[in-house]
Image 1 (spheres, rainbow, N blue to C red):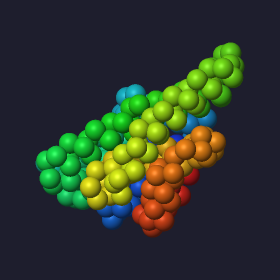
Image 2: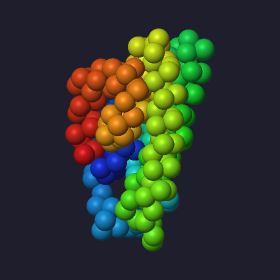
Image 3: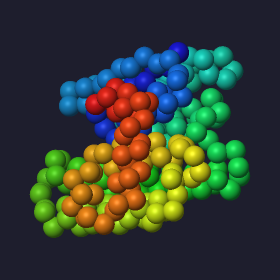
Image 4: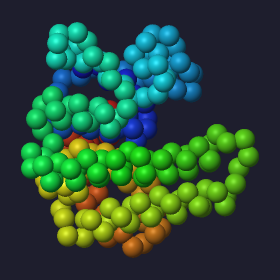
Amino acid sequence: MIDLYTANSSNGQRAAIMLEECGLSYRLRKLDLAAGEQREPWFLAINPAGTIPAIVDGDAPGGAPLPLAQSGAILLYLAMKTGRFFPLDPALRAQAFGWLMHAVTDTAAASMTIFLLQNYTPEKSEANVRWFEERAVKFFRVADGRLADHEYLAGDVSIADFALYPLTAVRRPLIDRAGDLPHLARWAAAMAARPGVQRGMQAAA
């Protein structure tokens, strides 16, 4: 059994989607981030960074429970554990790795900065928000270009698609406002129709 510690965020949704799509049994534990539950000692023993998502795999290789944080690492681990959503072709696998990193580093960083600027920075600046919105759209356009002649980011649906989709969901108003991302919109609709994606998004909502 896998324990998933999460909250309502793109990162948490990413991990939940992968668990659902892989058909793995898991227990869901939602943390109250506003109350600081992620900073409590019991959770810091699982993830010293105090961030979500994190998992504890009670059936990990070697027999000992395995704690693991970072949504990208969780996707990779679960893909290798199950042999699913992980391209076997070396070239496609490398592309999946690249698009996974595009999602969890470049695109996610821009999206997270928008959230922080709007909600938590000491001084609010609409100009700074607009700048990071433009940066996020730039990264979405890179994915849109890839999807112009590919159904998914790296061969069949993979960890790369599960990594990017929650960001397109939370930033849908931004994508719609840009008005020039038709391939990304087509792909996002296909991803949204997947039952595993729907369950994962709801689990971490």
